[in-house]
Amino acid sequence: MSAATPSKPLLQSSLLGLGLALLTTLGSVLLKYMWVPTFMSDWLIVGVIFVSCLGFALIEIPLMIYVIRNMAKSPKADTRRLAVWTNVAFVAFAVIYALPNIFLNDITQIWLGLLIASTSFLRCGSALVFLKDVL
Image (cartoon, rainbow, N blue to C red; front, side, top):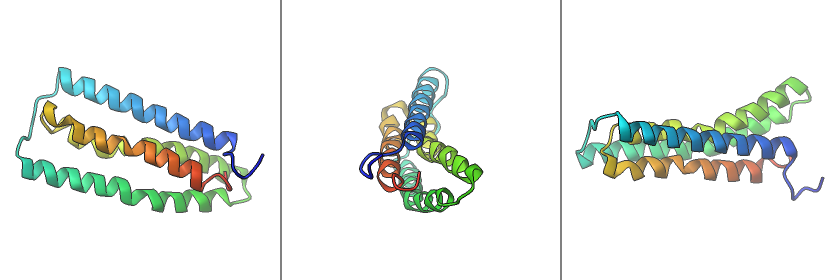
């Protein structure tokens, strides 16, 4: 395996996390559209929630890459397996930051939540780039 291509466990775990993120986002948007009422429409409050959630979603990326790299460098097989499953959770977890923006806002402002959920693609890409030599 060359250094330019990611390993099979890394690719599988990143794509599994991305798939979970997409399914969770789709499910939450459908749930919002069908059953959940709007709780907020004030743009100031919506903006504060959006900036906070987006900030957390972006700040977490380098921290988690560092943690997963250190976990994957362990010679124990259990720790490497845990690093692979942590990568799945890392990629999929961006949707958790998007949920307040999806469920609390008006349906016309749902794009804010989708923007935060799309950071799962950034997480997947950063995992494939920065973890390819350790996983």
